[in-house]
Every structure is written in C-alpha cells, then in structure tokens.
Amino acid sequence: AGLPLIDEYRLWVAFEVLTAEPFSFSLEDLVGFYGEMLAHLDTWAKDLQAVLPLELRNQRKWALPSEEELHLHLAQIAVAVLGRWLRTAEGGEDFGRVWHRSEGLLAGLTLRLNSLQSAGSRRLLPEVLRLERVGRAMSLTEKSVLAPRSGRLFRQVT
Image 1 (spheres, rainbow, N blue to C red):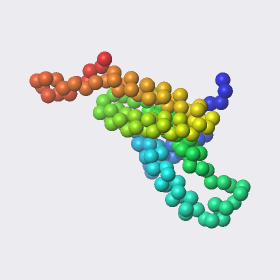
Image 2 (cartoon, rainbow, N blue to C red; image 1 turned 120 degrees about the vertical axis):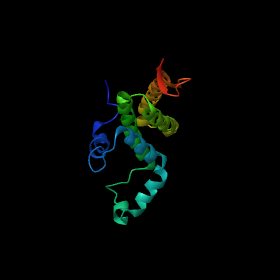
Image 3 (cartoon, one colour; image 1 turned 90 degrees about the vertical axis):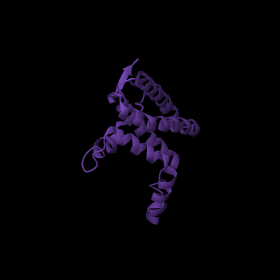
Image 4 (cartoon, rainbow, N blue to C red; image 1 turned 30 degrees about the horizontal axis):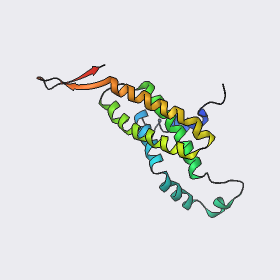
C-alpha cells in the first residue's frame, strides 16, 4: 500500500531519547516541544548553521538541510507525536490545555504544508487534517459544566 506516511526511524529521538532520563518528557511535553521547535524554526536553524564549522558548511558531500526540509522532518515527527497523544489522551483539564496548543500547531502545519508543495508535504497534509478533526471531535464530546448550587465541576459527556 505504498510508502509509510512517516518513517519510524525518524521517531527515535522523540520516543526513545526524550521520553527517557534525564529528559523524561511525557507525550504532552513532546507535543509542546515539537510545537515550539516548529514555531521558532527560522531562528534556531539559522543560529545552528552559524555555529557549525566553516569546513562542514562548505563540504559538498554533506549539505545542510534546507529550512523546508527541516520543517517537513519536524512536521512528520509532530504528526506522529500528536497521533500517539490523541490515541492515549483522556479528557479533562490536561486534555483541554494540550489540545488548545495542538490546534495552533495543526493550523500552522496546514498552512506551511500547503505552501511547501513537495511530495512529502502533500502526503502529510491529509494526516494533519485528520488529526485536527479527531482532536476537535474529542474536545467537543467532553464539556465541563459547573453544577449550579454546589460549585463543583462535573464532566458532561455528549
């Protein structure tokens, strides 16, 4: 059925390194981390390239990835992280907080992937849109309402 959407080899840093000691990132932490990496990519990518030794930057056999290539790579990881988080997420305050951040990430990915027009971005875009639909549906099915007299918070599932 064709190539897999995301090469599992690209996920080892997120799911093996960052979730282990000394980082111990949760899936929620990974969502935020990759969201921030993508949000500030234009700044840190230039800073990183500036600190690489000149010999390394000028070698023909090893070209630095372009900003677009970095964006697509990180987008693939962010999509895998979000997908895994949505499969394991439970409702409540934590879901609402992380989903709020994820909506912005997915909207940004949609805009950027639409503008890249590469084969990789065209393959990834439907998955971004699917995750957005799934997350929205999950956020709409769990509404918190305040009981009128007790002041206690109850979760209403619709």
